[in-house]
Image 1 (cartoon, rainbow, N blue to C red):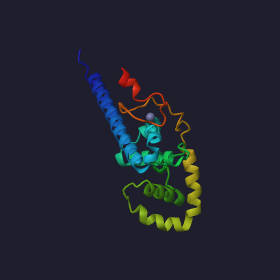
Image 2 (image 1 turned 90 degrees about the vertical axis):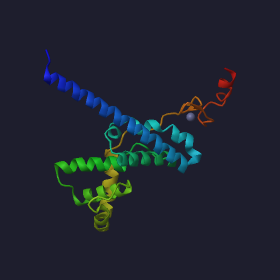
Image 3 (image 1 turned 135 degrees about the horizontal axis):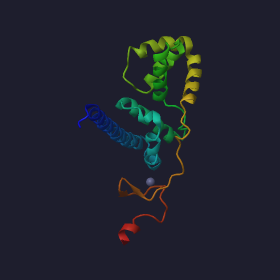
Image 4 (image 1 turned 180 degrees about the vertical axis):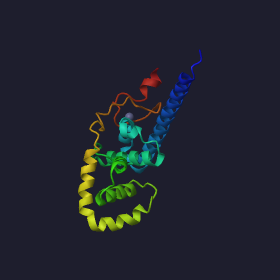
Length: 196
Ligand SMILES: [Zn+2]
C-alpha cells in the first residue's frame, strides 16, 4: 500500500543526502583552491600547506559553513596560521562570528560583543553588512581594550583541540602525481614507478 507520509520522508531523506554531499564536495573544492592560493603565497611551505587539508575538513563548525565566502575565510585563516607556524586550534574569526550571531538570536549583543563581531567580520574579509566597518570605528574608539579581551576569550571558547597537524607522513604522491615532497622519505621518489 502506498504510504504518502513514507514517500515524503524518503524524498526528504534523499534531498537531505544530496544537500549534504553537495555541500561536502563544494567545501572540498574550496579547500583545495584555498590550499593552492596559500601555496602560491608561501611557496617555501607548499608541502606543509598541502598536508594541512585535514585541518580544513574535520570539524563540526567547518561542516556547517555552507556559504562560500565564510568557509573560504575560515580556511584562509587556518592556512595562514600553518604558514606562520602558529597554533591552529583557537577559533577562527568566522567561528567566533558564527558563535556571536547564534548568541545574538537569544539576547542582544553587548557593545563589546557587537564590536567584536564587526571587527572579526571585517578581518575575515566578509562583505560589509549594515555598515559594520563604519560602526566599528566608533565602537573600537570607546572599547578597544575590552574588545581585545573579548576576542581572546572568544577564540579560546571556540577552540578546537583536535585541529592540529599531526606528524606529516607522505608517500611522495600529491593528487596522484609523484612529487619531491619534503615530507616523503628520501628513498621513496621516482625509482618506485620507473622500476615497476
Ligand atoms: Zn607530501
